[in-house]
Length: 308
Length: 253
Image 1 (cartoon, chains in turn red, yellow):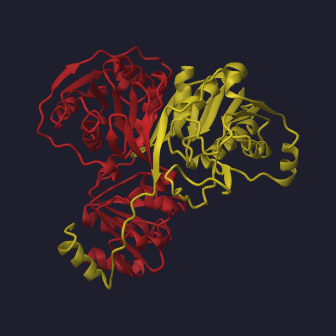
Image 2 (image 1 turned 60 degrees about the vertical axis):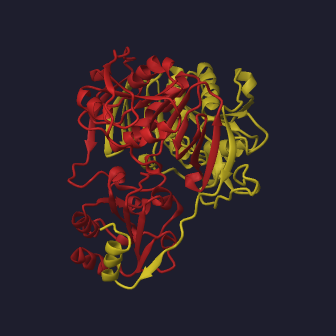
Image 3 (image 1 turned 90 degrees about the vertical axis):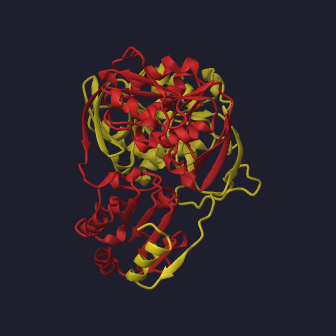
């Protein structure tokens, strides 16, 4: 039997989260078929066909799929579900939006945000904001799953799967896309960035966040923030790293003026190398940092910018 | 329009979570329990809709142990009008899965005919992020998840959603299910007079059998463990030393 994997893309390029989900799918067993659904996803389907371990790419072109609306996409996936044991998607906001709807339509209990695969029906997932890890076994005939990208390496690009068009499903016509308000930036996207520098409440103001942005540009890094900084209005909401924001695992994570609340740690503790800069040497962030610098950030950040 | 708000009783968000030594779960004996913070935001939004004249009645529902009535009383004290308690287990450690919760809520919707369901985007215990989406699927309704702004205009609602990379604005037909995100509003505290008044508000008690729903879990918990600990590293003396170590030792610059 086989795995159906919903690709995450913007109709132009395939999101890295898809390749990571392929790695998780390989551990579930069986052929892997990627579903690319979009308004114009032919190019994305070609990219998906190159991923190692993928045996077939299904391409569903329709304007109804152009903005990741849950109702038409769930109808499409449920229509294809008969051939599959596992239906998986990256645990992005799209995956989290769509997959529970798919699961309910198939009378299955969704398994959200898995961090490890222990067998075709047994998975590990974080609960209580990452303060505990649960291993769960599903008794459903079809397993509907979202995959935490930070927990899996991306599949390589040596494959050459076939691409096949599939017909669109009837659109239930319940909802309409109005607009996207995406922040335009030259910096990398948080969840796929190799380097991230994040600021916390210690930054003190929105203006001071510009100091972080300067260092980020030197590093080629994405900018993140703790929930405290977002709630204080120092940084926009989509910068938020943590259990209630984005879960990231870059090669380098620099936490500046962040104390290290559990909710923040849950979003970044899988980073390869963690650096903490904080003037409070008792801050819990130092307990997870590979390199700690006890210093005033307003003194340390300009020096860091100059040293890079 | 009636508004239905499901609320869940969970471990208080300030309590440090302890995994039980026998790996059967998290210790919930004698710890403070509260309303799931995202559900509080949903209750607040329903009250604001009522205050704005867009809703007539707010019904809150909780599915779990008998003590969930405390959570319901709290919602009534905030401003909800009446409550339905569905006693689905007598053991606080039996989490009723979102699929079963959605089936019970569907049966309640069939009876009550609300025009809107507002619910938290996820519960902070199982972190499933699923109940709202599953309920809208079972109803055949649209879903507006992760809402940070809600505008109801006649038989449609315009909802701003928090998505990766920014915000998405969508328009959904009513009735619908909305799941709410952190920045939608700041929930009010219940005043003492309102806490007293809430004691007199109606609360019905039901069981899953009343709605013909089987709440047996589809997922069995094999074990629950502490997350792997990350060991602390070294404290460096200066920015120069930090950059040097990141280049030579860690190899990330």
